[in-house]
Amino acid sequence: MSLPLDLLMFAALIGAILIGYPVSFTLAGVATLFALAGWATGQFDPGLLGALGQRVFGLMTNQVLTAIPLFVFMGIVLEKSRIAEDLLETAGRLFGPLRGGLGISVVLVGALLAASTGIVGATVVAMGLIALPTMLRNGYDPKLASGIVCTSGTLGQIIPPSTLLIILSDVMSNAYQQAQFREGKFTIDTISVGQIFAAALLPGLTLVGIYILYLLGKAWLNPASAPAMKALDTRPARREIAAAILPPVLLIVAVLGSILGGIATPSEAASVGAIGALLMASARQSKGENRLVFAGAAALGLLAVLIGVHPVRLQRSDAGLVDWLVGGLATVLVLIAAAAIAQALHRTFRGGVLKPVMTSTMSVTAMIFATILTASVFSLVFRGLGGDLRVEEFLANMPGGPQAALLFVMALIFVLGFFLDFVEISVILLPLVAPVLIMMGHDPVWLSILIAINLQTSFLTPPFGFSLFYLRGAAPKEITTGQIYRGVIPFIGLQILGMALIWLWPSVATFLPKLAF
Image (cartoon, rainbow, N blue to C red; front, side, top):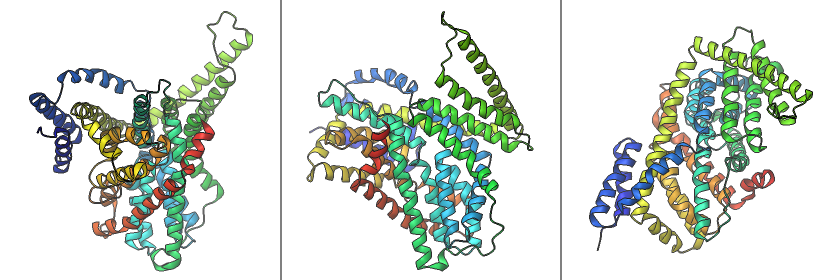
Protein backbone atom coordinates (compact mmCIF):
# COMPACT_ATOMS: atom_id res chain seq x y z
CA MET A 1 0.00 0.00 0.00
CA SER A 2 1.50 3.34 -1.06
CA LEU A 3 1.90 6.18 1.40
CA PRO A 4 -0.85 8.88 1.27
CA LEU A 5 1.57 11.58 0.14
CA ASP A 6 -1.19 14.18 -0.20
CA LEU A 7 -2.10 13.89 3.49
CA LEU A 8 1.55 13.84 4.54
CA MET A 9 2.13 16.93 2.38
CA PHE A 10 -0.60 18.92 4.12
CA ALA A 11 0.60 17.77 7.56
CA ALA A 12 4.20 18.74 6.69
CA LEU A 13 3.01 22.21 5.64
CA ILE A 14 1.14 22.84 8.89
CA GLY A 15 4.06 21.52 10.93
CA ALA A 16 6.62 23.70 9.16
CA ILE A 17 4.47 26.82 9.58
CA LEU A 18 3.97 26.12 13.29
CA ILE A 19 7.72 25.72 13.72
CA GLY A 20 8.11 29.24 12.38
CA TYR A 21 9.41 28.95 8.84
CA PRO A 22 8.34 31.78 6.47
CA VAL A 23 5.09 30.77 4.80
CA SER A 24 6.01 31.46 1.18
CA PHE A 25 9.29 29.52 1.42
CA THR A 26 7.51 26.71 3.27
CA LEU A 27 4.86 26.38 0.56
CA ALA A 28 7.38 26.20 -2.26
CA GLY A 29 9.78 23.96 -0.33
CA VAL A 30 7.17 21.43 0.79
CA ALA A 31 5.72 21.33 -2.73
CA THR A 32 9.15 20.67 -4.25
CA LEU A 33 10.03 17.91 -1.77
CA PHE A 34 6.73 16.09 -2.21
CA ALA A 35 6.83 16.48 -6.00
CA LEU A 36 10.20 14.66 -5.92
CA ALA A 37 8.84 12.04 -3.48
CA GLY A 38 5.76 11.52 -5.64
CA TRP A 39 7.89 11.19 -8.77
CA ALA A 40 10.16 8.65 -7.04
CA THR A 41 7.17 6.54 -5.89
CA GLY A 42 5.24 6.88 -9.15
CA GLN A 43 2.40 8.92 -7.62
CA PHE A 44 3.17 12.23 -9.35
CA ASP A 45 3.65 13.14 -13.00
CA PRO A 46 6.47 15.75 -13.20
CA GLY A 47 5.04 16.96 -16.51
CA LEU A 48 2.39 18.81 -14.47
CA LEU A 49 5.06 21.27 -13.34
CA GLY A 50 5.15 22.58 -16.89
CA ALA A 51 1.94 24.47 -16.05
CA LEU A 52 3.73 26.60 -13.43
CA GLY A 53 4.85 29.28 -15.87
CA GLN A 54 1.33 29.78 -17.16
CA ARG A 55 -0.04 29.89 -13.60
CA VAL A 56 2.46 32.53 -12.51
CA PHE A 57 1.78 34.65 -15.59
CA GLY A 58 -1.97 34.36 -15.00
CA LEU A 59 -1.64 35.51 -11.41
CA MET A 60 0.65 38.43 -12.19
CA THR A 61 -1.69 39.71 -14.92
CA ASN A 62 -4.90 39.10 -12.95
CA GLN A 63 -6.99 42.28 -13.20
CA VAL A 64 -8.54 41.66 -9.77
CA LEU A 65 -5.28 41.13 -7.88
CA THR A 66 -3.67 44.24 -9.39
CA ALA A 67 -6.03 46.30 -7.21
CA ILE A 68 -4.33 45.02 -4.04
CA PRO A 69 -1.23 47.29 -4.03
CA LEU A 70 -3.40 50.35 -4.76
CA PHE A 71 -5.81 49.61 -1.91
CA VAL A 72 -2.85 48.91 0.39
CA PHE A 73 -1.30 52.25 -0.64
CA MET A 74 -4.60 54.04 0.06
CA GLY A 75 -4.88 52.56 3.54
CA ILE A 76 -1.28 53.22 4.54
CA VAL A 77 -1.47 56.84 3.35
CA LEU A 78 -4.52 57.44 5.55
CA GLU A 79 -2.82 55.73 8.49
CA LYS A 80 0.52 57.57 8.17
CA SER A 81 -1.18 60.96 7.72
CA ARG A 82 -2.90 60.53 11.15
CA ILE A 83 -6.42 61.03 9.86
CA ALA A 84 -7.51 58.29 12.29
CA GLU A 85 -6.54 60.51 15.22
CA ASP A 86 -8.96 63.24 14.14
CA LEU A 87 -11.76 60.71 13.73
CA LEU A 88 -11.21 59.11 17.14
CA GLU A 89 -10.89 62.41 18.98
CA THR A 90 -14.04 63.85 17.39
CA ALA A 91 -16.11 60.68 17.87
CA GLY A 92 -14.96 60.35 21.49
CA ARG A 93 -16.15 63.87 22.32
CA LEU A 94 -19.42 63.25 20.46
CA PHE A 95 -20.42 59.97 22.16
CA GLY A 96 -18.55 60.45 25.46
CA PRO A 97 -21.55 61.54 27.58
CA LEU A 98 -23.29 58.22 26.86
CA ARG A 99 -22.58 55.25 29.12
CA GLY A 100 -20.42 52.99 26.97
CA GLY A 101 -20.15 55.87 24.50
CA LEU A 102 -16.37 55.77 24.22
CA GLY A 103 -16.52 52.11 23.21
CA ILE A 104 -19.26 52.85 20.70
CA SER A 105 -17.16 55.66 19.21
CA VAL A 106 -14.24 53.24 18.79
CA VAL A 107 -16.50 50.73 17.00
CA LEU A 108 -17.94 53.39 14.67
CA VAL A 109 -14.52 54.85 13.90
CA GLY A 110 -13.23 51.31 13.33
CA ALA A 111 -16.01 50.77 10.78
CA LEU A 112 -15.22 54.07 9.06
CA LEU A 113 -11.50 53.32 8.96
CA ALA A 114 -12.29 49.82 7.73
CA ALA A 115 -14.12 51.23 4.73
CA SER A 116 -11.38 53.77 4.00
CA THR A 117 -8.16 51.90 4.89
CA GLY A 118 -9.00 48.20 5.11
CA ILE A 119 -5.76 47.50 7.02
CA VAL A 120 -6.20 45.75 10.37
CA GLY A 121 -2.74 46.51 11.78
CA ALA A 122 -2.96 50.23 11.09
CA THR A 123 -6.42 50.53 12.67
CA VAL A 124 -5.61 48.47 15.77
CA VAL A 125 -2.34 50.30 16.42
CA ALA A 126 -3.93 53.73 15.92
CA MET A 127 -6.80 52.98 18.29
CA GLY A 128 -4.48 51.22 20.74
CA LEU A 129 -2.34 54.36 20.98
CA ILE A 130 -5.19 56.89 21.04
CA ALA A 131 -8.47 55.36 22.23
CA LEU A 132 -7.28 52.67 24.66
CA PRO A 133 -5.51 55.07 27.09
CA THR A 134 -8.57 57.35 27.00
CA MET A 135 -10.91 54.48 27.90
CA LEU A 136 -8.61 53.37 30.72
CA ARG A 137 -8.43 56.91 32.14
CA ASN A 138 -12.21 57.00 32.19
CA GLY A 139 -12.54 53.79 34.18
CA TYR A 140 -13.22 51.19 31.48
CA ASP A 141 -12.57 47.56 32.33
CA PRO A 142 -9.13 46.85 30.75
CA LYS A 143 -10.39 43.55 29.31
CA LEU A 144 -13.43 45.18 27.70
CA ALA A 145 -11.40 48.11 26.36
CA SER A 146 -8.81 45.73 24.83
CA GLY A 147 -11.52 43.59 23.27
CA ILE A 148 -13.21 46.63 21.72
CA VAL A 149 -9.99 47.88 20.13
CA CYS A 150 -8.93 44.46 18.80
CA THR A 151 -12.34 43.65 17.36
CA SER A 152 -13.05 47.06 15.84
CA GLY A 153 -9.74 46.88 14.01
CA THR A 154 -10.72 43.60 12.32
CA LEU A 155 -13.73 45.25 10.64
CA GLY A 156 -11.28 46.22 7.90
CA GLN A 157 -11.46 42.61 6.68
CA ILE A 158 -15.23 42.37 6.21
CA ILE A 159 -16.26 45.94 5.32
CA PRO A 160 -15.25 46.69 1.72
CA PRO A 161 -12.88 47.53 0.24
CA SER A 162 -10.51 45.05 1.85
CA THR A 163 -7.61 42.87 0.75
CA LEU A 164 -9.35 39.79 2.15
CA LEU A 165 -12.44 40.34 0.00
CA ILE A 166 -10.34 40.92 -3.13
CA ILE A 167 -8.38 37.68 -2.62
CA LEU A 168 -11.56 35.84 -1.65
CA SER A 169 -13.43 37.03 -4.74
CA ASP A 170 -10.66 35.71 -6.99
CA VAL A 171 -10.44 32.36 -5.18
CA MET A 172 -14.22 31.86 -5.07
CA SER A 173 -14.65 32.90 -8.70
CA ASN A 174 -12.13 30.24 -9.76
CA ALA A 175 -13.84 27.69 -7.51
CA TYR A 176 -17.24 28.58 -8.99
CA GLN A 177 -15.92 28.10 -12.52
CA GLN A 178 -14.34 24.74 -11.58
CA ALA A 179 -17.64 23.59 -10.08
CA GLN A 180 -19.51 24.50 -13.27
CA PHE A 181 -16.95 22.71 -15.47
CA ARG A 182 -17.29 19.56 -13.35
CA GLU A 183 -21.08 19.75 -13.72
CA GLY A 184 -20.66 19.80 -17.50
CA LYS A 185 -21.82 23.38 -18.07
CA PHE A 186 -20.44 25.20 -21.09
CA THR A 187 -21.87 28.65 -20.29
CA ILE A 188 -19.77 29.70 -17.30
CA ASP A 189 -20.81 32.35 -14.78
CA THR A 190 -18.23 34.22 -12.71
CA ILE A 191 -18.16 36.19 -9.48
CA SER A 192 -16.89 39.78 -9.55
CA VAL A 193 -15.23 41.83 -6.85
CA GLY A 194 -18.23 44.16 -7.00
CA GLN A 195 -20.58 41.32 -6.09
CA ILE A 196 -18.45 40.33 -3.10
CA PHE A 197 -18.14 43.96 -1.96
CA ALA A 198 -21.91 44.41 -2.23
CA ALA A 199 -22.52 41.13 -0.39
CA ALA A 200 -20.16 42.07 2.46
CA LEU A 201 -21.61 45.52 3.10
CA LEU A 202 -24.75 44.57 5.06
CA PRO A 203 -23.07 41.72 7.02
CA GLY A 204 -20.26 44.12 7.97
CA LEU A 205 -22.76 46.70 9.22
CA THR A 206 -24.64 43.90 10.99
CA LEU A 207 -21.48 43.05 12.93
CA VAL A 208 -21.08 46.73 13.84
CA GLY A 209 -24.67 46.72 15.16
CA ILE A 210 -24.03 43.54 17.18
CA TYR A 211 -20.94 45.07 18.79
CA ILE A 212 -22.81 48.28 19.70
CA LEU A 213 -25.77 46.36 21.18
CA TYR A 214 -23.34 44.27 23.23
CA LEU A 215 -21.61 47.41 24.56
CA LEU A 216 -24.93 49.06 25.46
CA GLY A 217 -26.05 45.88 27.23
CA LYS A 218 -22.72 45.55 29.03
CA ALA A 219 -22.84 49.19 30.18
CA TRP A 220 -26.43 48.78 31.39
CA LEU A 221 -25.77 45.53 33.30
CA ASN A 222 -22.38 46.60 34.65
CA PRO A 223 -22.08 50.41 34.57
CA ALA A 224 -18.64 50.34 36.17
CA SER A 225 -17.15 48.47 33.20
CA ALA A 226 -18.06 51.15 30.62
CA PRO A 227 -18.84 54.50 32.35
CA ALA A 228 -19.54 57.81 30.66
CA MET A 229 -16.60 60.20 30.31
CA LYS A 230 -15.69 61.83 33.62
CA ALA A 231 -14.27 65.07 32.26
CA LEU A 232 -15.70 66.08 28.92
CA ASP A 233 -14.38 68.94 26.83
CA THR A 234 -16.77 70.99 24.77
CA ARG A 235 -18.72 68.84 22.37
CA PRO A 236 -17.50 69.11 18.80
CA ALA A 237 -19.18 71.67 16.60
CA ARG A 238 -20.84 70.61 13.37
CA ARG A 239 -17.95 72.06 11.40
CA GLU A 240 -15.43 69.91 13.34
CA ILE A 241 -17.55 66.80 12.82
CA ALA A 242 -17.86 67.50 9.11
CA ALA A 243 -14.12 68.21 8.75
CA ALA A 244 -13.21 64.91 10.45
CA ILE A 245 -15.84 62.63 8.91
CA LEU A 246 -16.73 64.07 5.51
CA PRO A 247 -13.40 63.46 3.66
CA PRO A 248 -13.20 59.71 4.51
CA VAL A 249 -16.90 59.29 3.74
CA LEU A 250 -16.50 60.98 0.34
CA LEU A 251 -13.51 58.74 -0.38
CA ILE A 252 -15.54 55.64 0.55
CA VAL A 253 -18.44 56.74 -1.65
CA ALA A 254 -16.08 57.42 -4.57
CA VAL A 255 -14.37 54.03 -4.32
CA LEU A 256 -17.31 51.76 -3.47
CA GLY A 257 -19.80 53.75 -5.51
CA SER A 258 -17.71 53.45 -8.65
CA ILE A 259 -17.37 49.66 -8.19
CA LEU A 260 -20.96 48.91 -7.16
CA GLY A 261 -22.32 51.27 -9.80
CA GLY A 262 -20.38 49.49 -12.52
CA ILE A 263 -18.56 52.70 -13.46
CA ALA A 264 -15.05 51.45 -12.71
CA THR A 265 -13.18 48.19 -12.39
CA PRO A 266 -11.64 47.34 -8.98
CA SER A 267 -8.18 48.49 -10.09
CA GLU A 268 -9.60 51.76 -11.45
CA ALA A 269 -11.57 52.35 -8.25
CA ALA A 270 -8.45 51.56 -6.22
CA SER A 271 -6.60 54.22 -8.23
CA VAL A 272 -9.33 56.70 -7.31
CA GLY A 273 -8.89 55.75 -3.66
CA ALA A 274 -5.11 56.07 -3.80
CA ILE A 275 -5.26 59.56 -5.35
CA GLY A 276 -8.02 60.62 -2.96
CA ALA A 277 -6.02 59.46 0.06
CA LEU A 278 -2.95 61.30 -1.27
CA LEU A 279 -4.93 64.54 -1.61
CA MET A 280 -6.33 64.11 1.93
CA ALA A 281 -2.81 63.61 3.28
CA SER A 282 -1.67 66.70 1.37
CA ALA A 283 -4.45 68.76 2.94
CA ARG A 284 -3.33 67.63 6.39
CA GLN A 285 0.32 68.46 5.64
CA SER A 286 -0.55 72.00 4.53
CA LYS A 287 -0.60 75.13 6.69
CA GLY A 288 -4.17 75.95 5.71
CA GLU A 289 -3.34 76.48 2.03
CA ASN A 290 -5.63 73.91 0.43
CA ARG A 291 -7.10 75.70 -2.58
CA LEU A 292 -5.21 73.58 -5.10
CA VAL A 293 -6.15 70.37 -3.22
CA PHE A 294 -9.84 71.25 -3.36
CA ALA A 295 -9.53 72.38 -6.98
CA GLY A 296 -7.81 69.11 -7.90
CA ALA A 297 -10.46 66.99 -6.15
CA ALA A 298 -13.24 68.99 -7.82
CA ALA A 299 -11.51 68.68 -11.20
CA LEU A 300 -11.27 64.90 -10.88
CA GLY A 301 -14.95 64.67 -9.91
CA LEU A 302 -16.03 66.91 -12.80
CA LEU A 303 -13.80 64.96 -15.19
CA ALA A 304 -15.48 61.69 -14.21
CA VAL A 305 -18.94 63.21 -14.73
CA LEU A 306 -17.92 64.88 -18.02
CA ILE A 307 -16.47 61.71 -19.54
CA GLY A 308 -19.54 59.76 -18.42
CA VAL A 309 -21.92 62.27 -20.03
CA HIS A 310 -19.90 63.06 -23.17
CA PRO A 311 -16.96 60.72 -23.91
CA VAL A 312 -14.00 62.52 -25.48
CA ARG A 313 -13.02 60.95 -28.82
CA LEU A 314 -11.21 63.66 -30.76
CA GLN A 315 -9.54 61.15 -33.09
CA ARG A 316 -12.87 60.58 -34.85
CA SER A 317 -13.21 62.20 -38.27
CA ASP A 318 -16.71 63.50 -37.45
CA ALA A 319 -15.69 65.32 -34.22
CA GLY A 320 -17.52 68.64 -34.13
CA LEU A 321 -17.19 71.91 -32.24
CA VAL A 322 -18.89 70.52 -29.13
CA ASP A 323 -16.47 67.60 -29.04
CA TRP A 324 -13.46 69.93 -29.25
CA LEU A 325 -14.89 72.20 -26.52
CA VAL A 326 -15.45 69.18 -24.27
CA GLY A 327 -11.94 67.97 -25.07
CA GLY A 328 -10.48 71.36 -24.18
CA LEU A 329 -12.40 71.45 -20.89
CA ALA A 330 -11.24 67.90 -20.08
CA THR A 331 -7.63 68.93 -20.79
CA VAL A 332 -7.91 71.87 -18.38
CA LEU A 333 -9.39 69.62 -15.69
CA VAL A 334 -6.58 67.07 -16.19
CA LEU A 335 -3.95 69.80 -15.83
CA ILE A 336 -5.54 71.09 -12.60
CA ALA A 337 -5.74 67.55 -11.20
CA ALA A 338 -2.13 66.83 -12.22
CA ALA A 339 -0.95 70.01 -10.48
CA ALA A 340 -2.82 69.01 -7.29
CA ILE A 341 -1.34 65.49 -7.39
CA ALA A 342 2.17 66.88 -7.96
CA GLN A 343 1.73 69.22 -4.99
CA ALA A 344 0.44 66.30 -2.87
CA LEU A 345 3.48 64.18 -3.76
CA HIS A 346 5.81 67.09 -2.92
CA ARG A 347 4.11 67.82 0.41
CA THR A 348 3.96 64.21 1.56
CA PHE A 349 7.60 63.68 0.55
CA ARG A 350 8.73 66.83 2.40
CA GLY A 351 6.61 65.83 5.40
CA GLY A 352 8.26 62.41 5.68
CA VAL A 353 5.04 60.55 4.83
CA LEU A 354 5.57 59.31 1.27
CA LYS A 355 8.75 57.26 1.82
CA PRO A 356 7.40 55.05 4.67
CA VAL A 357 4.12 54.69 2.76
CA MET A 358 5.94 53.37 -0.32
CA THR A 359 8.13 51.06 1.78
CA SER A 360 5.15 49.61 3.68
CA THR A 361 3.12 49.22 0.49
CA MET A 362 5.93 47.28 -1.19
CA SER A 363 6.44 45.05 1.87
CA VAL A 364 2.76 44.18 2.31
CA THR A 365 2.20 43.65 -1.42
CA ALA A 366 5.29 41.46 -1.75
CA MET A 367 4.17 39.33 1.21
CA ILE A 368 0.69 38.82 -0.24
CA PHE A 369 1.84 37.99 -3.77
CA ALA A 370 4.66 35.73 -2.58
CA THR A 371 2.10 33.71 -0.60
CA ILE A 372 -0.35 33.57 -3.51
CA LEU A 373 2.32 32.51 -6.03
CA THR A 374 3.88 29.81 -3.87
CA ALA A 375 0.42 28.58 -2.84
CA SER A 376 -0.23 28.03 -6.54
CA VAL A 377 2.84 25.75 -6.65
CA PHE A 378 1.64 23.88 -3.57
CA SER A 379 -1.88 23.51 -4.99
CA LEU A 380 -0.56 22.13 -8.29
CA VAL A 381 1.52 19.44 -6.58
CA PHE A 382 -1.24 18.61 -4.08
CA ARG A 383 -3.70 18.10 -6.93
CA GLY A 384 -1.12 16.05 -8.82
CA LEU A 385 -0.93 13.72 -5.82
CA GLY A 386 -4.73 13.30 -5.84
CA GLY A 387 -5.38 15.46 -2.78
CA ASP A 388 -8.30 17.35 -4.34
CA LEU A 389 -10.09 14.06 -5.14
CA ARG A 390 -9.56 12.87 -1.56
CA VAL A 391 -11.03 16.11 -0.17
CA GLU A 392 -13.99 15.94 -2.56
CA GLU A 393 -14.70 12.30 -1.65
CA PHE A 394 -14.43 13.04 2.07
CA LEU A 395 -16.89 15.96 1.98
CA ALA A 396 -19.31 14.22 -0.40
CA ASN A 397 -19.52 11.11 1.82
CA MET A 398 -19.90 13.03 5.07
CA PRO A 399 -23.14 12.13 6.92
CA GLY A 400 -25.54 15.05 7.14
CA GLY A 401 -25.23 16.20 3.53
CA PRO A 402 -24.29 19.68 2.32
CA GLN A 403 -25.03 21.43 5.62
CA ALA A 404 -22.79 19.07 7.58
CA ALA A 405 -20.02 19.42 5.00
CA LEU A 406 -20.22 23.23 5.23
CA LEU A 407 -20.25 23.09 9.03
CA PHE A 408 -17.13 20.89 8.98
CA VAL A 409 -15.31 23.27 6.61
CA MET A 410 -16.29 26.31 8.69
CA ALA A 411 -15.05 24.57 11.85
CA LEU A 412 -11.81 23.64 10.07
CA ILE A 413 -11.26 27.25 8.94
CA PHE A 414 -11.99 28.45 12.49
CA VAL A 415 -9.43 26.04 13.98
CA LEU A 416 -6.81 26.84 11.34
CA GLY A 417 -7.37 30.52 12.14
CA PHE A 418 -5.70 29.91 15.52
CA PHE A 419 -2.43 29.22 13.69
CA LEU A 420 -2.56 30.53 10.11
CA ASP A 421 -3.03 33.92 8.44
CA PHE A 422 -6.14 34.67 6.35
CA VAL A 423 -4.08 34.79 3.13
CA GLU A 424 -2.68 31.32 3.79
CA ILE A 425 -6.10 29.83 4.52
CA SER A 426 -7.62 31.55 1.48
CA VAL A 427 -5.07 30.38 -1.06
CA ILE A 428 -4.25 26.94 0.39
CA LEU A 429 -7.49 25.48 1.80
CA LEU A 430 -10.30 27.24 -0.06
CA PRO A 431 -9.31 26.15 -3.61
CA LEU A 432 -9.63 22.56 -2.36
CA VAL A 433 -12.96 22.74 -0.53
CA ALA A 434 -14.89 25.60 -2.19
CA PRO A 435 -15.62 23.83 -5.53
CA VAL A 436 -17.03 20.83 -3.67
CA LEU A 437 -19.26 23.01 -1.47
CA ILE A 438 -20.55 24.93 -4.49
CA MET A 439 -21.32 21.66 -6.31
CA MET A 440 -23.35 20.63 -3.26
CA GLY A 441 -25.66 23.59 -3.90
CA HIS A 442 -24.30 26.37 -1.68
CA ASP A 443 -24.57 29.85 -3.16
CA PRO A 444 -20.99 31.01 -3.90
CA VAL A 445 -21.59 34.66 -2.94
CA TRP A 446 -23.26 33.75 0.37
CA LEU A 447 -20.53 31.17 1.00
CA SER A 448 -17.87 33.84 0.40
CA ILE A 449 -19.30 36.10 3.11
CA LEU A 450 -19.62 33.28 5.64
CA ILE A 451 -15.98 32.39 5.05
CA ALA A 452 -14.95 36.06 5.17
CA ILE A 453 -16.44 36.52 8.65
CA ASN A 454 -14.78 33.29 9.74
CA LEU A 455 -11.43 34.49 8.42
CA GLN A 456 -11.96 37.85 10.13
CA THR A 457 -12.29 35.93 13.40
CA SER A 458 -8.80 34.46 12.84
CA PHE A 459 -7.38 37.89 13.75
CA LEU A 460 -8.87 37.51 17.25
CA THR A 461 -8.23 33.87 18.13
CA PRO A 462 -5.20 33.19 20.37
CA PRO A 463 -2.39 32.31 20.32
CA PHE A 464 -1.49 33.78 16.90
CA GLY A 465 -4.30 36.28 16.31
CA PHE A 466 -2.61 39.19 14.54
CA SER A 467 -4.92 41.78 16.09
CA LEU A 468 -3.76 40.61 19.54
CA PHE A 469 -0.13 41.06 18.58
CA TYR A 470 -0.77 44.51 17.11
CA LEU A 471 -2.48 45.66 20.31
CA ARG A 472 0.18 44.09 22.52
CA GLY A 473 2.77 46.26 20.78
CA ALA A 474 0.70 49.47 21.10
CA ALA A 475 -1.06 49.00 24.46
CA PRO A 476 0.07 50.72 27.69
CA LYS A 477 2.25 48.68 30.04
CA GLU A 478 -0.54 48.21 32.57
CA ILE A 479 -2.47 46.09 30.02
CA THR A 480 -1.34 42.48 30.28
CA THR A 481 -1.37 39.89 27.51
CA GLY A 482 -3.83 37.82 29.56
CA GLN A 483 -6.25 40.76 29.73
CA ILE A 484 -6.07 41.18 25.95
CA TYR A 485 -6.75 37.47 25.39
CA ARG A 486 -9.65 37.38 27.86
CA GLY A 487 -11.04 40.61 26.45
CA VAL A 488 -11.53 39.22 22.93
CA ILE A 489 -13.34 36.03 24.02
CA PRO A 490 -16.84 37.65 24.16
CA PHE A 491 -16.23 39.25 20.78
CA ILE A 492 -15.25 35.90 19.27
CA GLY A 493 -18.65 34.72 20.46
CA LEU A 494 -20.25 37.74 18.77
CA GLN A 495 -18.44 36.84 15.55
CA ILE A 496 -19.90 33.33 15.73
CA LEU A 497 -23.32 34.90 16.35
CA GLY A 498 -22.82 37.03 13.23
CA MET A 499 -21.98 33.93 11.19
CA ALA A 500 -25.09 32.19 12.55
CA LEU A 501 -27.28 35.12 11.50
CA ILE A 502 -25.88 35.08 7.95
CA TRP A 503 -26.35 31.30 7.85
CA LEU A 504 -29.99 31.52 8.97
CA TRP A 505 -30.84 34.59 6.85
CA PRO A 506 -28.80 34.35 3.63
CA SER A 507 -30.61 37.38 2.18
CA VAL A 508 -28.48 39.63 4.42
CA ALA A 509 -25.55 38.72 2.16
CA THR A 510 -27.36 38.14 -1.14
CA PHE A 511 -29.83 41.05 -1.23
CA LEU A 512 -27.49 43.83 -2.39
CA PRO A 513 -25.65 41.73 -5.05
CA LYS A 514 -28.98 40.68 -6.57
CA LEU A 515 -30.18 44.28 -6.51
CA ALA A 516 -27.01 45.78 -7.99
CA PHE A 517 -25.96 43.00 -10.39
